[in-house]
Structure formats: structure tokens, C-alpha cells
Length: 447
Ligand SMILES: C[S@@+](CC[C@H](N)C(=O)[O-])C[C@H]1O[C@@H](n2cnc3c(N)ncnc32)[C@H](O)[C@@H]1O
Image 1: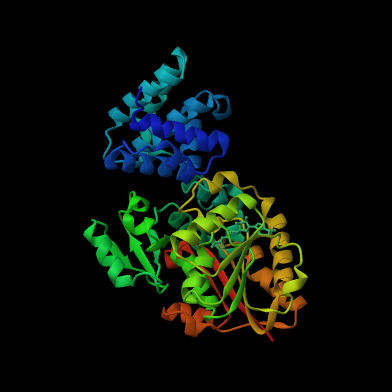
Image 2: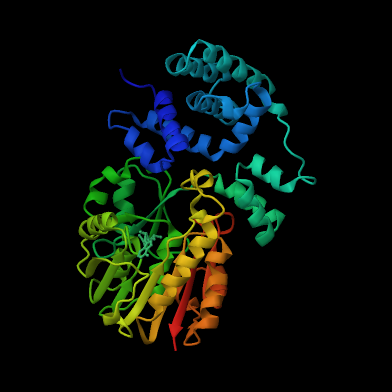
């Protein structure tokens, strides 16, 4: 029998919460082509909204349920979460509809007791939704931010230490905002203006990016990957912050470029564009199964200079030492800059990950630095805002590698504020400041 949109949302939530599925992958798997646009928009909004606000919603469940959160069956908990999201966050859905639809799901997925349980809790919350009591901001700042903006306490604690109260609060608010889709024009095939016109003709609302040269922003992107424009390689989906990486590395036509962590190929394909498809990019990744993703993008975008190889960046390739003009280390990272796009990151990352990952990043960077020619350019970037993975790591690298220095790249960015920051040789981008994903990009020269 055909599943209702709410049942599809429930199945997706359960995959994310119980099987640690990625939100975007689970959504794509559960949405078939016969779902209409409105239902698809509802499914996306409620999945992302419920996952973004999970900790706050669970706090409400704990306040209104006599059964402790960890004693509620996972599927019933997800029915409650979805119901509460609609009641508390979605003005256009009457509370009665949210309750009734949740009860229907409980009938299908629960037992007799759970039907009454769901009904009673949701009705109670609907009556009291304007009087939900939070921890006190002045007395328990970590708990307050954690509950109000649904972020794990360890993240909030870390950001409070690094960035202070006001910044952390605005960062958490921005992390819960839904970002617009950014695409990068494949300038090997079409100009920005021509692509914008084509997309406008198809009903997409488009505007130019603020920071990256070839960025277009789309605010109604549903099914954009099904368009002829995508299939024929006129653009690549990529956040504007991530587009700045190749722009800042700025390889020249004819260069030998090494991209040591390159899957799925977003930056390899961008560098090839900048190089006008002339020269060579050795595009490596340690995971065999991800090489196919690079290949797909390279073929779709008509990139002819990428040589795709499986290689572990923790190993040394003697044959390339001292040979490359540009090396990109777009390192594996905690990904905490991507919470806007992948809110499940908040619940699937654990604090211990950070120290392990910065060691991996440091070792990859140190190895990769050996491949540069004198005067060559080394770019190290991450999609995280944790300073241990970013500027602290670069400072340590420079301390131990006197043959490298940070290089001013104000000439490679357009925005006035970024130009100033770029003088230091690195930039930090934040969702609450720049309205992009959180990103770190540093540019070094081998002296
Ligand atoms: C941030 S992603 C790279 C994104 C890519 N540069 C792009 O723009 O599409 C980091 C990549 O590093 C790869 N990776 C992790 N450990 C690695 C290692 N030891 N050697 C090479 N690649 C590694 C991961 O498989 C992942 O694809």
C-alpha cells in the first residue's frame, strides 16, 4: 500500500535515528518519482526540522511523558518527535491534524497502549506549547543553549570556550536555518549568465553568489538534478565556501596538481575548470568505492585532465617528491561546518573524534607538503569550524616546517571583508557570519 508523506517521514527519521543513516541519502532513497512536489517539500521540511530540533523535542517529551525517554520504543519516539515538530514549529498545520495523523501512525506501528500514549502526550503538549520551561541562561548557559537550539552539550561547551556566548548562540541559530542550494557553473561549457537564463526559464529562482566567482544560488531547487542542464554537466552542486578553495589555490593551465583527498571530486573538477582543461590533476582518495564518484563527476562535467588513483595520503609517493606546482589537502574532518545541510551530524559525532582526526589531518598535511616544488602552493582546507583542525593545526605545521609560509591571497577573493581576512593567509567562514557552510581555507607557499 502507498505510504502517506508522514509515514515516509517516519521511516526516514527511524533510519537516521536508529541506523545512523545520513539525512540526505535516506531522503533520496525514500522519495520516489511519483511523489508530487508539495509532498516532497513537506517531507524534506519535516525530516530536517525534526532532526535539527531533536534535542529540544526530546526535552519536551521528557517533561510531558511519565515514561522515560530511553524506555519509549524507538518508533513511537519518532512518531512523537514528528508530531511535536508539527505542533511546536509548523504554524500552518493545525495541532489537531498533527495529533490525529500521529495516532494513525501509532495504530500502524505500535500496539494498543502506544495509541493512547501518543494521543495523550501530544494533546497535552498542544495545550502547553507556549509555556515550555528551559534551563536558565545565566545559571546553566551550556544546558540552555544545548536545549534551546538542539546541539549536544560537548559542542556547545567547546564553542563557548573558543567563541564566547553571543557568537555561539548565533552560530547555533544559523545551524538550524535551512540553507539555499548553491551550484557552481561549469565555465568550460557555459557562462554564468547563460546558465542563469536557462534555469530561470525552467522556473528556478536564481541569484548570484556573494563570494565565489562561479556561484549561483537557487532557492527552489527541488529535483534540479533531474534537469538536462545538470545531466549534461553545465553545473556542479557545491557550497559557495567550498568553491573558494580551488579559487584560492588558483592553479594555472599546464600545472601539475595533486589533490590528495579528492572524492567525490568537487574541487578536482573545479580546478580543472580554472586550468581550462590543460595540465594534469592527480586526483587521489584512499577509499576505492569513492573513486567511482570522482569518475562520474569528471565524465559528466567533461573534465579531461584528471588522473584518478587510489592512494593513501598517509603513505609517501617517492616519485612525486618536489615535483608538483600545487597541492590540495581538503582533509577529512569532523564536518561541523555542515550542520545546516546535514543536521544528523549533531547526533552522530562524538567528542573523542576530534583529537584522532586532527592527528590524521596533521600527518596527511605533512606528507603532502613534501610533493611541492620550490615556490609551489599548498592549500589546506576543511569543512569544520573546530580550531584544532584548522588554524591551530596550521600553526603547528609551520612551526615544524620552516620551509613553508602563509601567503596573502587578497587578490584571489572579491568580497571586501574576505580580502582583509585573506591577508593573513587563511580565512574562516561561518554560517552565522558569512551565511555559508563553516569552512577553513589556508594558503601556503614553499619558500
Ligand atoms: C572532505 S572530503 C574531500 C572532498 C573533495 N575534496 C571534494 O571537493 O569533493 C575528504 C576525503 O578524504 C578521504 N580520505 C580520508 N582519509 C584519507 C587518506 N588517508 N588518504 C586519502 N584520502 C583520504 C575521504 O575518503 C574523503 O573522500
